[in-house]
Length: 190
Image (cartoon, rainbow, N blue to C red; front, side, top):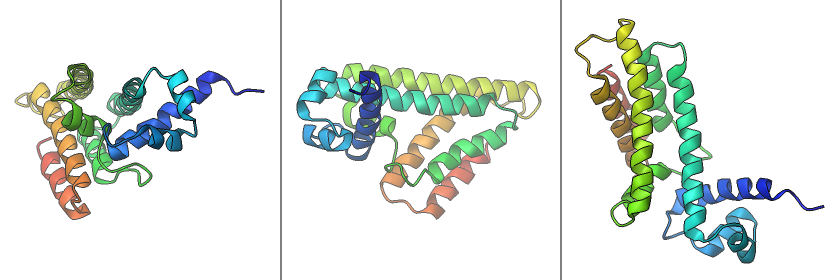
């Protein structure tokens, strides 16, 4: 009995996401995708319109997972400084099973300047993350956790940019002490 196609698609998207995350879009060949997903070339092209289609689905999958995790944290009860520390430490201590860096940041650097459709997807993703963080910072300011002088939008942009910088630094080989130093400097602003 054949497995349901949706299961195969979900599994293939997850596996492709990890392959693209590790090597980037251009450096990930169709053969790499076959090896990662366990699907043959014809199955990949019968299931997904193209490598580009599979990449876009993998990128959206990555963004949806990460944004859901961020929203859950920011909607939670801990004080804002603890929430911000958690977000920063996701970059300082990433899951060891994950490739280095961030698929969003890697894709922005690799494809953003020459692929307007991907650039727009990434821009909207950044807006989503900034909105999630800004809402939490505004609520914290209302509760008196932050002074009225703190600009929630600026702090949200700063956090998103700092996490992106931490991911780039980690991918570039920065050590734990360097990453902690950057994160602790950022945390002092909240």
